[in-house]
Length: 236
Image (cartoon, rainbow, N blue to C red):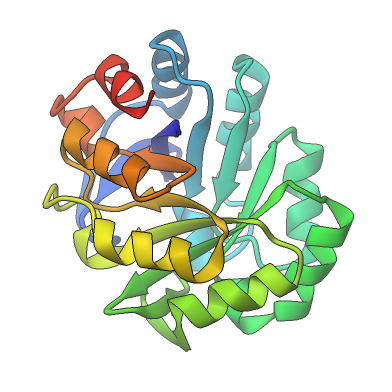
């Protein structure tokens, strides 16, 4: 199982939000410095989100992301504000290895299918759910569809990877929703990367045992709940 250290970018800074709320921000400095730290600590992949893009649409923090891509040797997956095929192409051309489509997977399904055909194996869908319902546009709008139904739809469209986040647990350090994540894996057979609430290496072990292909960890790493080395060991 792959461990993905998370870097969320807002106003050009690496930040963490509490349950995705734009006004509940902790600043952790320059994104490129955090990226270099995680790479030097043994990360094999990096998970990044352009938070301004998620809230506003578009590539708001392109300069910071491009700098990280040029600086690092490990692959990067990126989400946030990617709502058109041109957005996907822009990030692919910038060197991002995997693009994560969120809101558009609900609002523009054809774009997901087109992107999956254009970049086979390099498109993931971010399914951010609250009480099993998908949330969109930076987690502020209900998508009106169950997480499992969306996952099955995008599977039919040629996408094999999902980043599944339980919004109610994100940034809360309350533990991952292993049961719901495991249920999604069983129902879809997709490569599911678990996210939201991971607060211990035991969470990582549980997600691995549930069948997760990967786990995203943010606040727990930033606050020192465990080290990246410990996370990597738990995922082995």
